[in-house]
Image 1 (tube, rainbow, N blue to C red):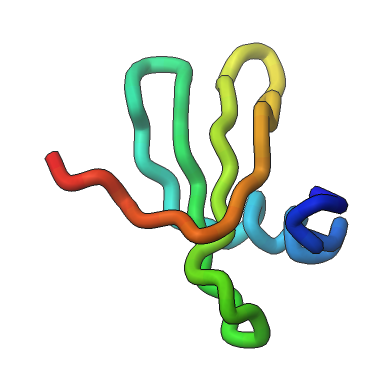
Image 2 (cartoon, rainbow, N blue to C red; image 1 turned 90 degrees about the vertical axis):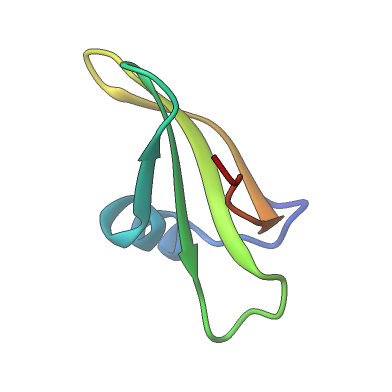
Length: 66
C-alpha cells in the first residue's frame, strides 16, 4: 500500500464499495475507480475463507476479458 500510495481509508472504501468479480469459489478481485487518483482503478486480490484475506493491493488495473 505504501509503495502505491494507497491509504487505509481508500482500502476500506475499496473493500466496502468496490466491484467484485469471482475467479472461482474462493478467489475474488475487487476494483474501484477513485476520481482523485490518476492511476486507473485500484484493486485487490482476496481469498474468501472464514474471513476475507487481502493478498495484494495494486493500481493501473484493467478487467480481463472473458
